[in-house]
Image (cartoon, rainbow, N blue to C red; front, side, top):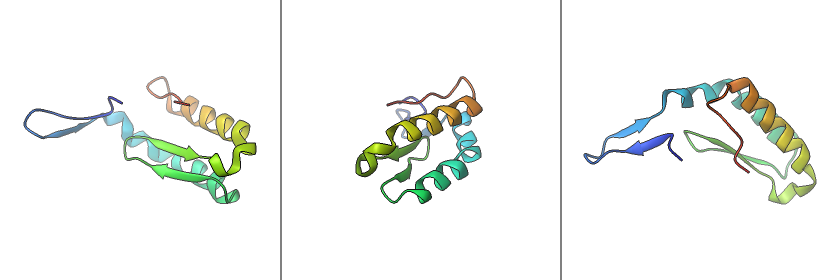
Length: 80
């Protein structure tokens, strides 16, 4: 998605702003731990919350992710 890329020589480049995800990870971990059907996936340069097994929580998950993106600033957005 543009945050991580590999150049022609095989060197991986990671956008520096990806490290800021650590500031919102604890809140998302707490959200996932409160609801057994949620799963937080750390993709390295992105975080994902899977809620297929708890689809009734879609609104809460979307609000939490929106708040996290707001705290991170304009370089971050929620990708549904």
